[in-house]
Each structure stands twice: as C-alpha cells, then as structure tokens.
Length: 299
Image (cartoon, rainbow, N blue to C red; front, side, top):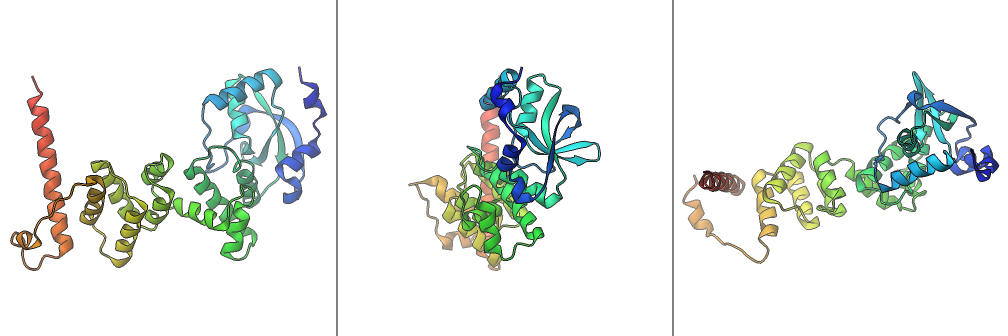
C-alpha cells in the first residue's frame, strides 16, 4: 500500500528535482520490468551492497520506490540515466518492476543529467569523481561550451567544486587502474596522483610495480620529480627505485663512494645505466634471500 506522502508527489516535483527545465525535456511516468533496464554506458559511480544499500532495500520493502528513476529508450529496453542504486535495491527487495520517468535524451544531455544526479552523494571516491567529471566535461564541450576554464567551472557547479578542482580530478582519470586504486585508498595523495597522471602508461606501470615491490608510494614531491624525469627523457626503472628507497629508508642513509662504484663499470656507462644495474642486482639478491629463508623453513 502506497503512503499518502507518496501519492501527493507530483510529476512536476520530479522534473524540478532532476532538472527537466534545465534540459528542456518532457518525460513520461510509468513502471517498467527490471529485466528491461540496462546500466548507463561507462557508469562511473559504484553501486555497492553495503549498509546504506540495505537501508534503501528496507525502505523499498516498506514504502516502495518514492522517487522514480530516469531512463531513456535503447535497443532492447531502457538505459538507466539516474537511479542505479534504486534499481539494485529493487532487485534485492524482490521487486519485479520499478517506477521511472522515460525521457528522450541524446548522449550529451543524458551524461550531464547522470553526473548531476549523483555527484553530490556523500563519500564519493576520487576515481568516481574523476571519471564522472571527465564524462560531463566532454559532454559540455560537445554541447558547445567555450573555453576550458568556463567548462570546468560548469562541470563542478553542482557539487560546489571550483574549475581548478575539476581539472585536477579530470587529470586523475588518466591514471592506470592500479595507481587510481592507490589514490582511492589514500596510499597516494591526490596531488601526487595528479602529477603521476602526466606519465606515459608504461611509465605508470613501472611506478606501480616498483611501489608494490618495496611497499613505498610516491609523495607529491617525488611524483613531481618523476614527472620532470619523464619530460626530460631521463625516466628509468632505476630512478623510480632510487626515489622510493629514499622515502622508505626514513632516517637511515647509506653513502657509497661514486669513485668506488665507477671502478665496476665501463667508462661509457651513464649515471642512469649504473643505477639500473645496481637496483637490478639488489632485486636479484633480495629474491635469493627470500628463497633461502623459505628453504630453511621447509621440513
């Protein structure tokens, strides 16, 4: 049985809530089977079966879906523009259909609406905002927004983020998945992630591997150094380890005479080449020590 408060809600209130006037698009209210719903392409927001989802499920069971989702027609049903969490809650609650507003939206208008109806959610991960802002930025550019700064300001308006903050998030979207996860978990600061995003994908892979091997992650200053090395063409595996080992060592430091080291290498070897050989040999030594320990524990 529907609540009286639900019966009092009019379609115009939904339009105001989801910005129909802004998009100048009318919609049709109806209910559709859950089997006909499909997720928004490249939907950047996570839908988790967490405590908040359970609260939504309980609400759906008790009151139904008070606030309809927004969908648009697609080849084999409807693409969900807003309401992915409500859709999932309906599934978990055992519902077979969900109330929606059907709207004819082009890709850009649908993207802007999708981002705007989700971007003010609490506890969004940096990766979610990065991908969402990038999608909305590109959509607004397609719609004819002029000037990067103006567009970035428009992108962040709904969430109260400045154009500069938006640009930083958009840079994060250029990180490889592994590094973006480290930003999400706080092991790499957002500022450091922004600087690492300027590295080539293969360079980012090298940073991710090195960080995983030694359990140390680039600070903002170190990320800036890595970016500079990439721009100067001096980026190498050895340079990554050299930076991260400095951080990991904390107060301990070991100084080896460069003159003594030179005795072990051909005169033509550069500093970078020498570093690569040293760290390669250290890694081999580390692996052998690990094998010796494992062998000693074997019965």
